[in-house]
Image (cartoon, rainbow, N blue to C red; front, side, top):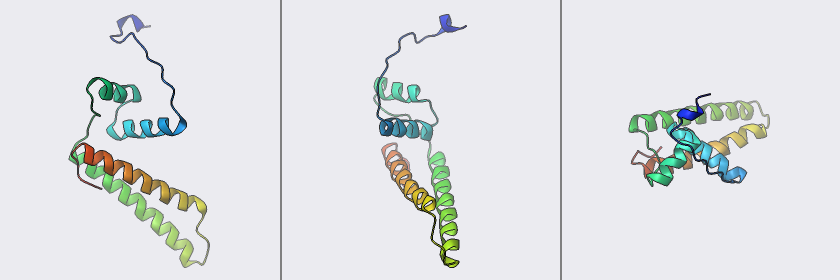
Length: 114
């Protein structure tokens, strides 16, 4: 099975709230590592893994693209005198929360603000 070749034999189970797990998952995905790898970096190296300024720019650009798409969708409903679906409003709010988290991570790792 390959488990006899593992370098890491010890596991430490932890309990997280749904929100804690979501934040941890998002932060690990932003830097492109698994949750266990992210936690190892924090615990052993006392810092989170970082990503380059080029990667921060790509994240910023993607957030802006999504924001523009949501704005266009919202404007279409408004133009046609239709109520904006709550899903679009929820996505817009979530996007703003993600932008705040990404900005904080970028500042912490020396990247530029989004």
